[in-house]
Length: 112
Length: 114
Image (cartoon, rainbow over all chains, first blue to last red; front, side):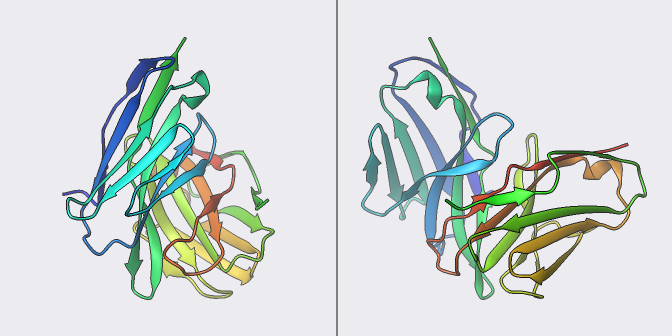
């Protein structure tokens, strides 16, 4: 199993659609989890952290299932500006320090 | 706002040249990282540093070295550039060593090695 594995995509959806991204991770001792967003030819930026109880930020909802080692991101009422690559990110303890491991990303295109 | 800057947005070098990529952060962050990003492979960690003059190998350190002489600056060095080092290079920084620390990225350097 790859360390962090995401839906390969790409996803093409109309404006207003609901879209869900899935991610699995292999290290059961992983400490924390994030979704980053990367626009075309730009750097990744933190979208949201993912907590065990699930968390919501406006149209975005993130869920974590530690038993299944599964993370999800739901985007409701998608906008054109949501078009980007979404990166699933896991923070693992490597030696005495934490390191982020990135999924390969899922490209989302929201169409008018 | 955290600001991470990289010395060049685009760079073209020849095989065998020594290449320096510079990264500076202005938020007094302890940790700094160098990644490369390639289509189909995602972001991969090259080297990282948790303190001045300290460095640790990431997942793909071969062909690279780093230098951190000052807290705010982390340099990536390609001793003898090769065509397979053509890539997007991203620098990042984070505040401390908590598992919940966010990493902030610079704008990236697109390096082409001919």
